[in-house]
Image (cartoon, rainbow, N blue to C red; front, side, top):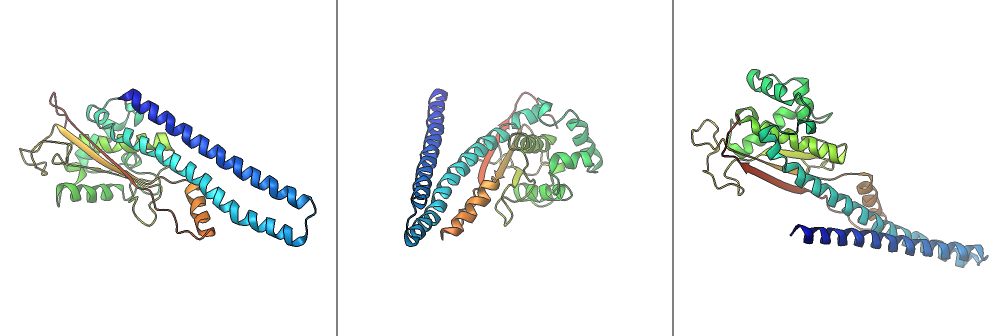
Length: 269
């Protein structure tokens, strides 16, 4: 199965590069022909026709080229998001702290015991510009999933670690991203939102219990759901080009992945 996946991935990469190369080749040939015609001292009307031809065809070629690049970047971001939610296992066992820094455990446990969110914790849970409201944002997401009055600090610590591992993995692989924020919102491009999900998710066969104070709550299970909208200068350029040729703006790409693990050997709190 893995070998088949690698073959399809290789074919996809070859297709992207071949289409991009063909587009550039056609664009270059059109520009070369147009410039050659102008150089041959054509009449003013002919020169005007050639210039008009360039003006109409260039945006179309650029849209095709930028679209290829844009969806290639989205493909990369989707793979990074899948790997990010896959760090739930690392978060549960606190493994590979190189992803998040060696001070993650004392920082998180200090917050859980005192209730005070230190700057170090906020830097783990939020990107610059989003840190002040990070705890409130995650608490709101937690209430949506686990019920009113249940906050992130009420859940087993593995949920907090899972969110931190996921956002930091995305940051390391994609560079500058914004979190936590709504990727479906008006300013959603570049936004990453990771939320804890309870054991009754489709990823678990455990009991439908969302109250962490209930003895039946499954403390051996942890899961998160992350949503991300990729952003780069290419997305802005292609939106502008769509407007130039009279098309509506391309839809905002929002990808979603979730992952959960159930551990029976031990259950750290």
